[in-house]
Image (cartoon, rainbow, N blue to C red):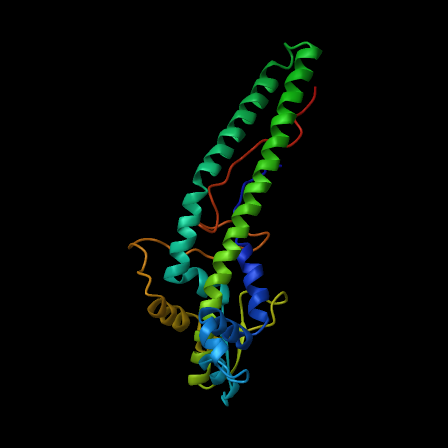
Length: 251
């Protein structure tokens, strides 16, 4: 079986969990974190503007938002994930070189196994297995490192975006917003129409708030990746590396 070094958005899972904790709580935490002095000078029961808006919300509409898409499609998200992908390009190239080396050794084994004596063949097999083990460990370490940094970026953006979502929902008559990042049955929403989705308005409002310029023309916003799906274009996934099977054939 071919193993691939696929960089997935662990931020998807992390962000979904954080989002589920409540936009109201995030809005309060964000306000306190951004201005400790102001928080200290404010009465304990005085909520932030966004939290106050949520508390006074009387809307009855139900809306949806794909929080993953909102984060990764925002100008700030696209910028930061592109920077992260470029940061990992040297490691990706290094792993590709290791995979190519193992492939070359496997081809050598397959081509010469009838000509090699048992000692030489076993030596080559052990060499392949040792390199494969190092490759697998390096791939896993790089994957975990990349995913961890993706999660940090996603949570940082969500923390800033959360009060904006609360404010938008309150001002537009929404009494509930459901996250559609995870499809049913993993997510709570079975079906919804585009008329109730606020993802694009939130992305546009967040872009104005962040002040981050749009990516260069022609660039494509990354799409969230979930386990078991094919990787999209970077930064959601780096170029796949194709190492050989973990155990080379012994003849």
